[in-house]
Length: 295
Image (cartoon, one colour):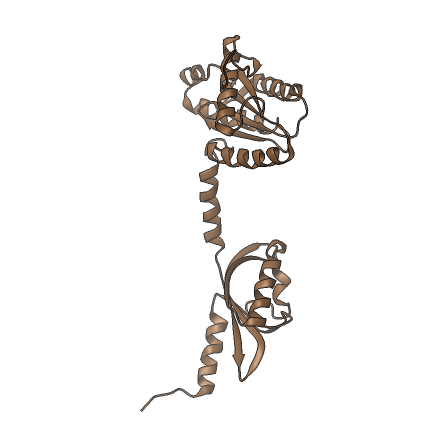
């Protein structure tokens, strides 16, 4: 014989479970108006009131399909708490067809903010240099690919500046690697404040950096940026109580005149940078096509 609990007792158990659950729960109608909400969340607000603007349309569309076609969904979205804190929720929406009633649904969600924060940290490590915080070589190629697509479509120009800190090994040998790292981080900060909004500065490794330049008209515009960077880097650095001076050698190459893709353009800018070093360092040079050949 089946040992079945009374319905009233079961209902109380369900209510207690919902009240004590750390998860979010909305029961709502076709207008998004709550008809039942877990007690920890404000029952006086519509379902969409707390949703982050960038995620609102996607959630509304999914809920509309859910209510009209009884099609369940799983998605992630962000909400604002009263104190302004932003939370990530992973939610499942499903229809409620009870006693023949339609047009009602439930959204059950759990807080995944800590997971998303860890994901963002790992993404940043994958695409940014740990020492300087600048985009790394991987992110540079992504940015260049996007810029190249726009440049080809709208017949824009692109330029790369390839720069190297002159005699950086001497800094490490004289002052130690800790000072060398501090110099690189400070130089990266100066570089970040020397470029324009649409441009990107990347650390390629060691003491080498690349600047991707967009939205310019003349070669001289690029030369001015390169010379400004050289001037900024030539100012003495105050590091751990010591004043250290260093210069840079910079080379520039242009798309589409010098090369049609990222790797070739990097090679051209690198060649121009070494030409700067051959001129005595602390110099800026444009890439020059070799006679009778190409890059």
